[in-house]
Image (cartoon, rainbow, N blue to C red; front, top):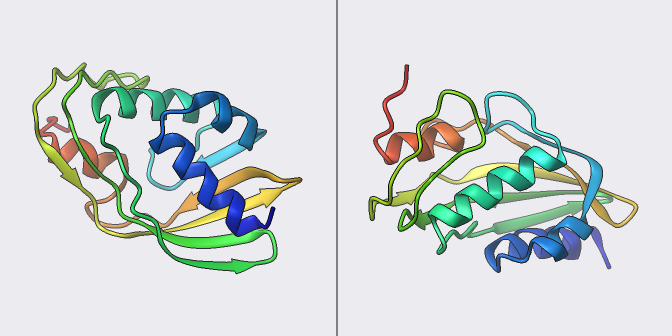
Length: 145
């Protein structure tokens, strides 16, 4: 399986709500950085994705423009979803949000996946105004301190 195939399969496993497949695709020392206040490890990343999917079952990455350079794949992700469930993020200071029916549509974010030994090892997202976790919370009208 090429790096681009692995990268395409990762977001698909998240969208299909298949944590068992995703867990097997993500390296134990995985790092997710950029659209969150502090980089997340595998466990925290999996918890964040689970919370977002519970709140927005129609979550989509809308991945496009894949470019592969060895074990590094750059792609544009444009997250969309509708908050039809409770959002309980595993992060201190963020309140639990009841279902609102609000739609989220983030701007395209350039994202770089690193693949090692056939697994997703790292995801770096270039911070984009209106993007990332802050963009989601803003569109859901969460007051930011």
